[in-house]
Amino acid sequence: MAATDLLDRAGTLHAAFRADVIAGLSARPRAIPARWFYDHRGSELFEAITRLPEYYPTRVETALLAEHAGAVGRIAGPGRAVIEFGSGSSAKTPHLLSAIAPAAYVPIDISGDFLRQSADALAADFPGLPVIPVEADFMARVALPRDVRHLPKLGFFPGSTIGNMGPAHGVDLLRAMAGTLGEGAMLLIGMDRVKSPAILIPAYDDAEGVTAAFNLNLLHRINRELDGDIPIAAFRHRAIWNDEAARIEMHLEAMADISFTVAGQRFAMAAGETIHTENSHKYDPRGARLLLAAGGWTPMREWTDPDGLFALILAEARPPETAP
Image 1 (tube, rainbow, N blue to C red):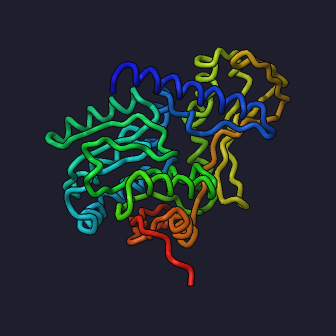
Image 2: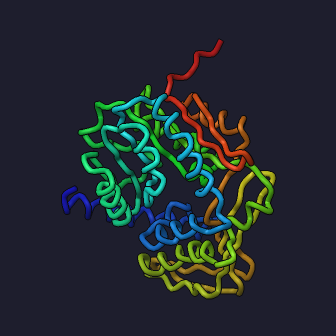
Protein backbone atom coordinates (compact mmCIF):
# COMPACT_ATOMS: atom_id res chain seq x y z
CA MET A 1 0.00 0.00 0.00
CA ALA A 2 1.40 3.42 -0.98
CA ALA A 3 2.29 5.95 1.71
CA THR A 4 -0.48 8.30 0.57
CA ASP A 5 -3.02 5.47 0.77
CA LEU A 6 -1.88 4.68 4.32
CA LEU A 7 -2.24 8.32 5.30
CA ASP A 8 -5.70 8.50 3.76
CA ARG A 9 -6.68 5.31 5.55
CA ALA A 10 -5.36 6.60 8.87
CA GLY A 11 -7.24 9.86 8.42
CA THR A 12 -10.49 8.06 7.64
CA LEU A 13 -10.14 5.79 10.69
CA HIS A 14 -9.34 8.75 12.95
CA ALA A 15 -12.42 10.61 11.75
CA ALA A 16 -14.60 7.53 12.29
CA PHE A 17 -13.14 7.00 15.77
CA ARG A 18 -13.81 10.61 16.72
CA ALA A 19 -17.36 10.49 15.37
CA ASP A 20 -18.19 7.25 17.20
CA VAL A 21 -16.71 8.45 20.51
CA ILE A 22 -18.43 11.84 20.45
CA ALA A 23 -21.76 10.28 19.45
CA GLY A 24 -21.39 7.52 22.05
CA LEU A 25 -20.54 9.86 24.93
CA SER A 26 -23.42 12.15 23.94
CA ALA A 27 -25.97 9.31 23.80
CA ARG A 28 -28.12 8.05 26.68
CA PRO A 29 -27.23 5.43 27.65
CA ARG A 30 -23.63 6.09 26.68
CA ALA A 31 -21.97 3.48 24.44
CA ILE A 32 -18.87 3.25 22.25
CA PRO A 33 -18.50 0.51 19.58
CA ALA A 34 -16.25 -2.36 20.65
CA ARG A 35 -14.23 -2.21 17.42
CA TRP A 36 -12.28 0.73 18.88
CA PHE A 37 -10.73 -1.50 21.54
CA TYR A 38 -8.18 -2.68 19.01
CA ASP A 39 -5.35 -0.22 18.78
CA HIS A 40 -1.94 -1.87 19.11
CA ARG A 41 -2.08 -2.01 22.91
CA GLY A 42 -5.68 -3.22 22.86
CA SER A 43 -4.76 -6.01 20.48
CA GLU A 44 -1.88 -7.05 22.77
CA LEU A 45 -4.18 -7.08 25.80
CA PHE A 46 -6.79 -9.14 23.99
CA GLU A 47 -4.16 -11.72 23.09
CA ALA A 48 -3.25 -11.85 26.79
CA ILE A 49 -6.94 -12.40 27.63
CA THR A 50 -7.06 -15.41 25.32
CA ARG A 51 -4.35 -17.09 27.44
CA LEU A 52 -6.16 -16.62 30.76
CA PRO A 53 -7.44 -19.76 32.53
CA GLU A 54 -10.93 -18.24 32.89
CA TYR A 55 -11.22 -17.44 29.18
CA TYR A 56 -12.42 -20.76 27.77
CA PRO A 57 -13.40 -19.69 24.18
CA THR A 58 -9.87 -19.61 22.75
CA ARG A 59 -8.81 -22.84 24.43
CA VAL A 60 -11.93 -24.75 23.37
CA GLU A 61 -12.04 -23.34 19.84
CA THR A 62 -8.35 -24.09 19.27
CA ALA A 63 -8.92 -27.69 20.33
CA LEU A 64 -11.89 -27.95 17.97
CA LEU A 65 -9.79 -26.61 15.09
CA ALA A 66 -6.97 -29.03 15.84
CA GLU A 67 -9.42 -31.93 15.83
CA HIS A 68 -11.66 -30.98 12.89
CA ALA A 69 -9.59 -28.85 10.50
CA GLY A 70 -8.96 -31.97 8.42
CA ALA A 71 -12.70 -32.43 7.92
CA VAL A 72 -12.98 -28.78 6.90
CA GLY A 73 -10.20 -29.35 4.38
CA ARG A 74 -11.92 -32.38 2.91
CA ILE A 75 -15.20 -30.50 2.46
CA ALA A 76 -13.67 -27.24 1.19
CA GLY A 77 -11.07 -28.87 -1.05
CA PRO A 78 -7.61 -27.51 -1.93
CA GLY A 79 -6.72 -24.28 -3.68
CA ARG A 80 -8.94 -21.84 -1.80
CA ALA A 81 -7.90 -18.39 -0.65
CA VAL A 82 -8.42 -18.22 3.11
CA ILE A 83 -9.81 -14.81 4.08
CA GLU A 84 -9.64 -14.22 7.83
CA PHE A 85 -11.82 -11.45 9.25
CA GLY A 86 -10.40 -9.69 12.30
CA SER A 87 -7.25 -11.80 12.25
CA GLY A 88 -5.50 -10.37 15.32
CA SER A 89 -2.45 -12.51 16.04
CA SER A 90 -3.66 -15.29 13.68
CA ALA A 91 -2.84 -17.73 16.48
CA LYS A 92 -5.51 -20.28 15.45
CA THR A 93 -4.91 -19.93 11.73
CA PRO A 94 -2.04 -22.46 11.36
CA HIS A 95 -4.39 -25.31 12.30
CA LEU A 96 -6.60 -24.41 9.35
CA LEU A 97 -3.86 -23.59 6.82
CA SER A 98 -2.05 -26.85 7.57
CA ALA A 99 -5.19 -28.85 6.79
CA ILE A 100 -6.60 -27.31 3.62
CA ALA A 101 -3.72 -26.70 1.15
CA PRO A 102 -4.67 -23.04 0.51
CA ALA A 103 -3.66 -20.99 -2.51
CA ALA A 104 -3.31 -17.77 -0.49
CA TYR A 105 -4.01 -16.28 2.93
CA VAL A 106 -5.54 -12.81 3.34
CA PRO A 107 -5.82 -11.56 6.94
CA ILE A 108 -8.10 -8.51 7.36
CA ASP A 109 -7.85 -6.36 10.48
CA ILE A 110 -8.42 -2.77 11.55
CA SER A 111 -5.19 -2.61 13.61
CA GLY A 112 -2.62 -2.13 10.85
CA ASP A 113 0.68 -2.45 12.74
CA PHE A 114 -0.48 -5.53 14.64
CA LEU A 115 -1.86 -7.01 11.41
CA ARG A 116 1.40 -6.67 9.50
CA GLN A 117 3.45 -8.01 12.42
CA SER A 118 1.24 -11.10 12.67
CA ALA A 119 1.19 -11.59 8.88
CA ASP A 120 5.00 -11.53 8.73
CA ALA A 121 5.24 -14.13 11.47
CA LEU A 122 2.74 -16.43 9.76
CA ALA A 123 4.44 -16.02 6.36
CA ALA A 124 7.68 -17.21 7.95
CA ASP A 125 5.91 -20.35 9.19
CA PHE A 126 4.36 -21.07 5.75
CA PRO A 127 7.06 -20.37 3.17
CA GLY A 128 5.69 -20.37 -0.35
CA LEU A 129 2.17 -19.39 0.74
CA PRO A 130 1.19 -15.90 -0.49
CA VAL A 131 0.22 -13.88 2.61
CA ILE A 132 -1.48 -10.61 1.69
CA PRO A 133 -2.61 -8.52 4.70
CA VAL A 134 -5.44 -6.02 4.20
CA GLU A 135 -5.97 -3.19 6.69
CA ALA A 136 -9.71 -2.58 6.64
CA ASP A 137 -12.89 -2.46 8.66
CA PHE A 138 -14.55 -5.76 7.70
CA MET A 139 -17.93 -4.57 8.96
CA ALA A 140 -18.49 -3.37 5.39
CA ARG A 141 -17.76 -5.17 2.13
CA VAL A 142 -14.00 -5.32 1.53
CA ALA A 143 -12.31 -5.14 -1.87
CA LEU A 144 -10.01 -8.16 -1.91
CA PRO A 145 -6.53 -8.06 -3.48
CA ARG A 146 -6.55 -8.67 -7.23
CA ASP A 147 -4.37 -11.77 -6.85
CA VAL A 148 -7.13 -13.69 -5.03
CA ARG A 149 -10.33 -12.41 -6.60
CA HIS A 150 -10.53 -15.28 -9.10
CA LEU A 151 -9.89 -18.00 -6.49
CA PRO A 152 -12.53 -19.97 -4.59
CA LYS A 153 -12.67 -18.62 -1.07
CA LEU A 154 -12.97 -19.84 2.50
CA GLY A 155 -13.78 -17.15 5.04
CA PHE A 156 -12.49 -17.67 8.58
CA PHE A 157 -14.11 -15.83 11.48
CA PRO A 158 -13.00 -17.44 14.76
CA GLY A 159 -13.32 -16.25 18.33
CA SER A 160 -17.10 -15.80 18.39
CA THR A 161 -16.55 -12.18 17.34
CA ILE A 162 -19.99 -12.34 15.72
CA GLY A 163 -21.32 -12.22 19.29
CA ASN A 164 -20.02 -8.67 19.71
CA MET A 165 -22.84 -7.48 17.46
CA GLY A 166 -26.53 -7.49 18.16
CA PRO A 167 -28.52 -9.86 15.95
CA ALA A 168 -29.39 -7.15 13.40
CA HIS A 169 -25.78 -5.98 13.06
CA GLY A 170 -24.62 -9.60 13.03
CA VAL A 171 -26.85 -10.27 10.04
CA ASP A 172 -25.48 -7.14 8.33
CA LEU A 173 -21.93 -8.36 8.92
CA LEU A 174 -22.65 -11.83 7.57
CA ARG A 175 -24.18 -10.27 4.46
CA ALA A 176 -21.12 -8.05 4.04
CA MET A 177 -18.90 -11.15 4.31
CA ALA A 178 -20.99 -12.90 1.68
CA GLY A 179 -20.53 -9.86 -0.54
CA THR A 180 -16.78 -9.83 0.07
CA LEU A 181 -16.32 -13.55 -0.61
CA GLY A 182 -18.93 -14.12 -3.33
CA GLU A 183 -21.56 -16.75 -4.02
CA GLY A 184 -20.31 -20.30 -3.50
CA ALA A 185 -17.74 -19.26 -0.91
CA MET A 186 -17.54 -21.03 2.43
CA LEU A 187 -17.27 -19.57 5.91
CA LEU A 188 -15.85 -21.27 9.00
CA ILE A 189 -17.16 -19.36 12.00
CA GLY A 190 -16.80 -19.80 15.75
CA MET A 191 -19.89 -19.16 17.90
CA ASP A 192 -20.08 -19.22 21.68
CA ARG A 193 -22.91 -21.14 23.35
CA VAL A 194 -25.32 -20.03 26.07
CA LYS A 195 -24.12 -21.40 29.42
CA SER A 196 -24.06 -20.74 33.16
CA PRO A 197 -23.13 -17.20 34.31
CA ALA A 198 -20.76 -18.93 36.74
CA ILE A 199 -18.62 -19.79 33.70
CA LEU A 200 -19.36 -16.69 31.64
CA ILE A 201 -18.72 -13.84 34.08
CA PRO A 202 -15.18 -14.90 35.13
CA ALA A 203 -14.27 -15.19 31.44
CA TYR A 204 -14.97 -11.44 31.12
CA ASP A 205 -13.81 -10.33 34.58
CA ASP A 206 -10.67 -12.35 35.31
CA ALA A 207 -8.84 -12.47 38.62
CA GLU A 208 -5.67 -10.90 37.18
CA GLY A 209 -7.52 -7.84 35.88
CA VAL A 210 -6.38 -8.24 32.28
CA THR A 211 -9.90 -7.78 30.90
CA ALA A 212 -10.29 -4.69 33.07
CA ALA A 213 -7.08 -3.27 31.59
CA PHE A 214 -8.36 -4.08 28.09
CA ASN A 215 -11.61 -2.22 28.76
CA LEU A 216 -9.88 0.77 30.37
CA ASN A 217 -7.39 0.96 27.50
CA LEU A 218 -10.21 2.42 25.42
CA LEU A 219 -10.11 5.50 27.65
CA HIS A 220 -6.33 5.73 27.29
CA ARG A 221 -6.79 5.62 23.50
CA ILE A 222 -9.42 8.37 23.60
CA ASN A 223 -7.15 10.59 25.69
CA ARG A 224 -4.17 9.97 23.43
CA GLU A 225 -5.82 10.22 20.01
CA LEU A 226 -8.67 12.64 20.67
CA ASP A 227 -6.98 15.12 23.01
CA GLY A 228 -9.01 13.88 25.97
CA ASP A 229 -8.52 14.40 29.68
CA ILE A 230 -10.69 11.58 30.98
CA PRO A 231 -9.74 10.73 34.60
CA ILE A 232 -9.18 7.04 34.00
CA ALA A 233 -8.63 6.22 37.67
CA ALA A 234 -12.24 7.31 38.29
CA PHE A 235 -13.57 4.38 36.23
CA ARG A 236 -13.88 0.67 36.93
CA HIS A 237 -14.55 -2.32 34.69
CA ARG A 238 -17.84 -4.19 35.03
CA ALA A 239 -19.01 -7.42 33.37
CA ILE A 240 -22.74 -8.26 33.56
CA TRP A 241 -24.78 -11.23 32.31
CA ASN A 242 -27.99 -10.01 30.64
CA ASP A 243 -30.10 -13.16 30.60
CA GLU A 244 -32.99 -11.66 28.62
CA ALA A 245 -30.68 -10.68 25.76
CA ALA A 246 -28.42 -13.77 26.19
CA ARG A 247 -25.28 -11.67 26.34
CA ILE A 248 -22.37 -10.59 28.51
CA GLU A 249 -22.12 -6.80 28.69
CA MET A 250 -18.93 -4.88 29.46
CA HIS A 251 -19.20 -1.40 30.95
CA LEU A 252 -16.91 1.34 32.25
CA GLU A 253 -18.53 2.69 35.40
CA ALA A 254 -17.79 6.13 36.86
CA MET A 255 -17.03 5.76 40.57
CA ALA A 256 -17.61 9.47 41.30
CA ASP A 257 -19.18 12.52 39.68
CA ILE A 258 -16.72 13.59 36.98
CA SER A 259 -16.35 15.93 34.00
CA PHE A 260 -13.89 15.79 31.15
CA THR A 261 -13.15 17.00 27.62
CA VAL A 262 -12.78 14.94 24.44
CA ALA A 263 -11.98 16.52 21.05
CA GLY A 264 -12.89 19.92 22.44
CA GLN A 265 -16.30 18.86 23.77
CA ARG A 266 -17.22 18.79 27.44
CA PHE A 267 -18.95 15.83 29.12
CA ALA A 268 -20.14 15.09 32.65
CA MET A 269 -21.00 11.75 34.23
CA ALA A 270 -22.62 10.98 37.56
CA ALA A 271 -21.30 8.34 39.95
CA GLY A 272 -22.65 4.94 38.91
CA GLU A 273 -23.24 5.97 35.28
CA THR A 274 -21.59 3.73 32.70
CA ILE A 275 -20.20 3.70 29.19
CA HIS A 276 -21.34 0.47 27.52
CA THR A 277 -18.33 -0.81 25.59
CA GLU A 278 -19.05 -4.38 24.48
CA ASN A 279 -21.68 -7.06 24.12
CA SER A 280 -20.89 -10.73 23.68
CA HIS A 281 -24.04 -12.55 22.57
CA LYS A 282 -24.29 -16.29 23.10
CA TYR A 283 -26.27 -18.58 20.80
CA ASP A 284 -27.95 -21.93 21.18
CA PRO A 285 -27.75 -24.24 18.12
CA ARG A 286 -31.05 -23.13 16.59
CA GLY A 287 -30.30 -19.43 17.11
CA ALA A 288 -26.87 -19.83 15.50
CA ARG A 289 -28.32 -21.48 12.39
CA LEU A 290 -31.05 -18.86 12.12
CA LEU A 291 -28.54 -16.00 12.36
CA LEU A 292 -26.39 -17.54 9.62
CA ALA A 293 -29.37 -18.14 7.35
CA ALA A 294 -30.54 -14.54 7.77
CA GLY A 295 -27.04 -13.40 6.75
CA GLY A 296 -27.01 -15.41 3.53
CA TRP A 297 -25.16 -18.51 4.75
CA THR A 298 -26.39 -22.10 4.74
CA PRO A 299 -24.83 -24.24 7.51
CA MET A 300 -23.17 -27.41 6.19
CA ARG A 301 -21.42 -28.97 9.22
CA GLU A 302 -21.13 -28.18 12.90
CA TRP A 303 -18.64 -29.31 15.53
CA THR A 304 -18.77 -28.72 19.28
CA ASP A 305 -16.86 -29.81 22.39
CA PRO A 306 -18.20 -32.50 24.76
CA ASP A 307 -19.40 -29.86 27.25
CA GLY A 308 -21.21 -27.82 24.59
CA LEU A 309 -19.30 -24.64 25.43
CA PHE A 310 -18.47 -23.57 21.88
CA ALA A 311 -19.23 -24.46 18.26
CA LEU A 312 -17.44 -24.30 14.92
CA ILE A 313 -19.83 -24.05 11.97
CA LEU A 314 -18.96 -24.43 8.29
CA ALA A 315 -21.45 -22.65 6.03
CA GLU A 316 -21.81 -21.84 2.34
CA ALA A 317 -22.94 -18.62 0.65
CA ARG A 318 -26.03 -19.47 -1.36
CA PRO A 319 -28.75 -17.35 -2.98
CA PRO A 320 -31.82 -16.84 -0.77
CA GLU A 321 -34.58 -19.41 -1.00
CA THR A 322 -37.65 -18.51 -2.98
CA ALA A 323 -40.69 -18.28 -0.72
CA PRO A 324 -43.40 -20.87 -1.48
